Structure formats: structure tokens, C-alpha cells
Image (cartoon, rainbow, N blue to C red; front, top):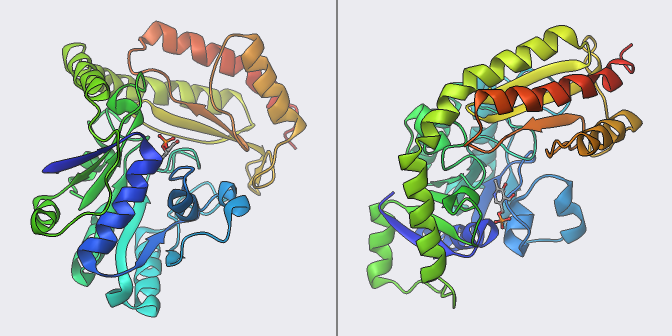
Length: 334
Ligand SMILES: Cc1ncc(COP(=O)(O)O)c(C=O)c1O
């Protein structure tokens, strides 16, 4: 990433990434996935594949879906070759010459901490290169150390053409988002007008917060902390999965983690329907609130995404609350 265009948040970064990709390529279609959240503004909502999109339809013209790495209701990802073939098929049928960009959350966040299997991110990069399509990595949630590397793409040594950032950029103390771009894209806009001015772009107060935040990441080695605690979190996940039959699956990379709850592991039966809830999930969320644990528990999942400054003892305290809450879901196991 050689140059950065600053916005006020993640969704605005996505809007501008769509525009950069369209203006740069002269093509209008953008590909996105179903198990994806990209923000609440109009274009970002259209790229969003999850049910938050439904009330905002019809959306932006030219957004086309390609297959996810993980099917809803299945524990394991699809084989890499199958996922990549799905993307290739969509490109063939839509016409590469009409497609500006492939958007993806490098690691899917609110739709389930879906960690792509090795080979997938590199494969998407290769398909984009072969077809003259820009690869846009949405790192609004996975970026800035969450996974134990500065950016999730670093795990697979891939450089996207555009990268959207927000949240951890200022640790969310002040509003700031960004679109990072490679030199060839930035250079194109040296001579070509970019129709995307924002009154608050590069706001000095937000930028000061970003610089201060980045200094703290470095001085306190918070990225290293996330990396070191990744295996500790995995051990907690494994312990809970061994103790609780309602823990169907668990995933984490660094401090980006999740537990998926089930009524039955075989056949795999999630504790809630898609986009739904259940009495057990409501009771678990209530238990968390009453026991001082603040975490996101959508659908049949419990997100385990603590602050990057957490230590082992605090992590254990959080997992102790989750351990006790899982007695509720265990009662639903058939
Ligand atoms: C992956 C991802 N992209 C974009 C956004 C939108 O960011 P913001 O809420 O700052 O507009 C979010 C917010 O949750 C997100 O998780």
C-alpha cells in the first residue's frame, strides 16, 4: 500500500474503494460474497451479503455475488479449489471486461470469523491478476493487529490493490477510515480527477489519534500480544469443546475468534436457524450481561474478540464466564 485516502469510517472507505475501482478500470461491476458485512451506507449495504442488506434493496447496480469459502450450517470450509472455481465461473459468465473489483473481507468478521483455508487468498489474487480485476481487501475488522499480524493479508503474503481500514486505525477513539492503494492506482489519479472529496477527509484530529494509536501498538507490542495469545485462546476453545457438547466448532487467528453452538454435531444442527435466534442464545446473552462479559453473540455464535491489550489472566476470566454459560446450550443437545 503506497498511498492512502482518508474517510470517516469503514463504510465510507468501502464507498470510495468502489469508486476508485470503477474509475480506475472503467468497468462497473463489483463482486462480493453472501457471508459478508461491508457497512451501512448505500453501496456498502449492497456489497453486504448478509440479511442486513434485505431492507435496503434494491441497491447499487452492478453488484454480483460469488461463492463463500464456508457454507452456512457446515463446520468445515469448502475445498479451496472449489471456492476458487466458483469465483472463476462467475467471472466467466459476467465477463471479465465488465468487472472492476472483487471485494472480500480477508477474514470474514461479523458473519462468523471465517478464516480462509491456505491457498484461497493467493488464489483470488492470481485470478484477479489474470483478469485485470482489482482485488479489494476489507480489513476494517481484521486489520490493525487483531489476527496477530498488522493486517490479515500478511498471513498469506498477499498485497491487494485496494485495502479498506477503520476501527483499529484509531482504536475507534475517533472516527477515521482509510483506503490504502498501490502506487499504480494512486498514480492514475495524479492526472485523472477523483470525484470523491469529503469535507472531513484527513481530519487532523482523527489523524493525530491514528498516529497515537499506532505508537501504542508499537510501544506496547499489542500485535505481538495478539499473536502470542492466539494459541492461548485456541487452548481455551479446545477445552470448552471437550467439556461442552454444544460447542460444535471453534476458530481463531490471534485474538479473532468464535465458538459455533449446535444442537447436534452429527448431523450438524446449529443452535439457531439462519438469521434467527433461540431461547438458549437469548439466555446465554443474558447470562453474559449479568456476569459482566461484553461480547457479540449473533445467530448461534459467541465471538471471542477481546481488546488487544488483554493478558492471560483476563482472558481466562472471560472464558470462565463463557464456560458457565455453555451449560445452558448443553441442555439443548440431542
Ligand atoms: C468488515 C467491515 N467492513 C466495514 C464495516 C463498516 O465500518 P463502519 O461501521 O466504520 O462504517 C464494518 C463494521 O462493522 C466491518 O466489520
